[in-house]
Image 1 (tube, helix red, strand yellow):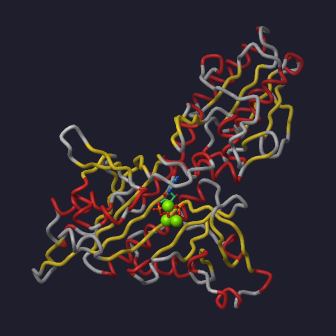
Image 2: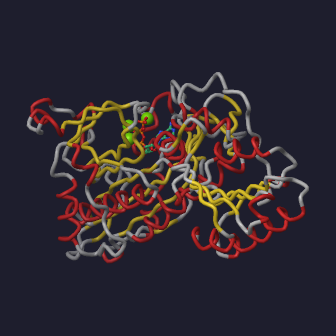
Image 3: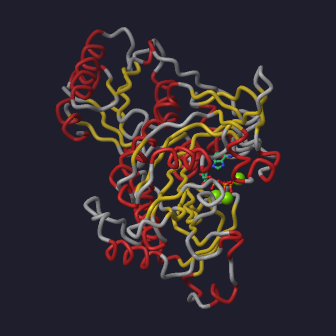
Length: 439
Ligand code: ATP
Ligand code: MG
Ligand code: MG
Ligand code: MG
């Protein structure tokens, strides 16, 4: 992408409405624009990051055996009357009436709809286990939308739903998603700790929130600090190995970790004092086994091996990609701007032509641009007619992990400057070496 042809509306001033650094930087870097309270347009730079985030989520969902589909955003109210949630859900639900006076709603989540789809087709235990997911916009009329896309009213969610014949099967499905979540967040360079979460009236211990520690987090959380150095499950994890997955989850739940609602002072006191972490956290994912809560009232039943019909055991598994983009910035920034981890960077490399109008720097930049693009990298070439200082500031603000600075003096010696955004380290190298170092 040539910056002269791109749409990157950078703000010079600090937006007054932004209370936290991620919101400020997303506005300043031209990633999002608020259209009305809690509702955002994703501008090109923001959309690139959102797509990288959903790409990783999708790969890890698929790896764990979940199958992607796409459900609509608008749902009929009657579906929610079947489960009893239409009245129970309250004011967070955006209710709509169509021209025929039919009651509809903008989906805040999809348990009812996926149960309706399932019951329309699946009759036998032989078709189980099944895990279906989608990545779709949700609407919740949050009482206090704030912090940009961290808590917005319209937001993106990956929500998966598992179907099993019995609780043991459902536990395996839960463990598979638990494992996939650990991999997903680790691949984004984030340390997310699974913490015991409230299961409400269903009870049991099968609900975890995945929490990223951050001072600006909205939840108070308590955990053993050793979790922060635990290994991530390997890419070749066998998701069919029930005992193996159980072991993995047992280890990741062996130490104390709980959100405020589930916090137990006595349990926390048993953690060695130097390992007690009482902090703020951001909920980026939430997994939940809820048994037959929806399958029973909605009559989603399958025949078991004995021919008997029984309601399926279900779980749901959410991740908030649009919240994650903000959380990633909370975890990766400095005074000058965003520092994207390589895996989610909107551009892997920014090439800065430090002397606009100079044919030698322009040619060298074009050459680098072609070579890096050909290797599959996302490259931004700052070819604007602007002074070098402005280009440095823009590159630092939008946070590409690598920068290549191309100026006439260095070029005369066959050199460009390669800069790593995270450390600020700069090195004089030949253009060929710069390409080799990045790839
Ligand atoms: P919160 O406690 O922050 O209100 P929640 O518990 O209501 O979140 P879930 O129903 O568990 O959210 O939804 C799954 C995921 O969707 C959350 O873990 C979060 O990452 C994301 N999410 C929920 N609400 C929002 C929102 N208003 N804006 C952005 N992301 C959200
Ligand atoms: Mg909520
Ligand atoms: Mg919550
Ligand atoms: Mg939740």
